[in-house]
Image 1 (cartoon, rainbow, N blue to C red):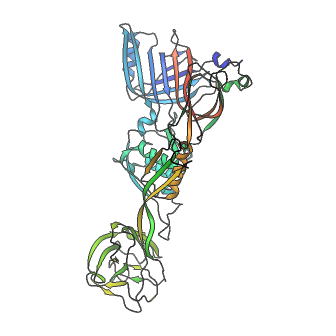
Image 2 (cartoon, one colour):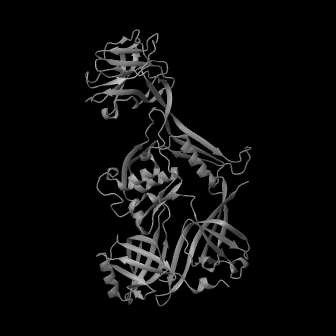
Image 3 (cartoon, rainbow, N blue to C red):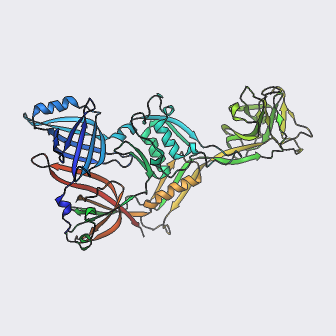
Length: 561
């Protein structure tokens, strides 16, 4: 009979950090009682929701004098660590918390009980730090395609930057890593894709990590040994644990007894459409890598613009110009940054037009070999008008920039030159070139996924919208919607109950089998995932030993007709 789980209860080992960094310890296995335990409940950390604890203690001899000694040696902000085990050698550290509140209650004048409450140590840091920063994915040499190998824009690198680089903290002094969070690449494993753009503007660190989770299909937390963890949400730990409602169950009789738990009375089982949707719309940010107008031919004989301004005309078909890219190279070492001007045309040249924007890039970004260079504009244009891209005169005969072009005699000319930037002359044969340019426009990114919509009368015709302004690529938005639909297109089945603990410790995210064979409602499935989990310990009269059990919520998702 599987009764070993009742004969060997799990017990907690607890340490409280003193103000001088030494420890108060409660360890029943070793007979160490710097304080006595009245009750303990804690929820281990798993995702951005965080963990919490509620610990109630009295002094080792239940005296007020020793209780006051404890109070004089601890303060809010100090750490609390909790291990669980059936022996001291087999105990596992499951929780590291920070005391947020210390409450003294007195049932009578001779008994002081100390109630210590707070959250997990990692959440105390992540949820209370402010971060800043901007990350943009680079383009490939063609100036059009985003570079998928740009590791600086990957989710894992952005998360690492947020945790470790002082430049992403407003005061530029102490990072989360400086506070003790251990950051290693091996523990940061989301769906690791580059983001076209990601911004933190005086926002909570935990909120920005949660934004990365939504795109990377991950969860994040700081474990009890202070390691930062970011892992894919669908990565579960198959424990091989069986939870049953009958001592004499035939399956339980042959099960590994160290992986067996017993369901107590008053459990519940729910089938719910809580998360179910028939259709999910996804709205991202603006797609900015789409070309409206361009001339990309480079004949390899560029024109210098140290003695003249050069202009290239275009007529937009889209009214929002986001970026303009031109193909440039340099001679020598120019000392002034290249400047691109955007002019509205009047009388066939920029002469009497309106200067809409002047944008520069770093001169060091331009090499002696030709490459595409982006100038960010974000202007609304008139699709019925002509506009001119102007490269401002810059440098001298030994140090200057060059604008690359085709070698075709374009007639009529759509390029122009000027010596002063005021009076312009259309180029003449044989130099009626088209200068290289790409005019990018932006459009809102939107996608939709749906399930089983065959008529207006289908059951539960619910819709939802996911808005992620940081996503500007269709592939990323599709990945997010697919991840969401894994659960949204199904029915949620949820078990809530109290169980006597198996010898194998259970943690949030663990996969278990639940078998209710002698109850009114029969259940036997091995794909339940533990969500919320509370460890509860209630001391016995001698304030030393007691009973131990879990309160768990475990869920699975099934197909919806």
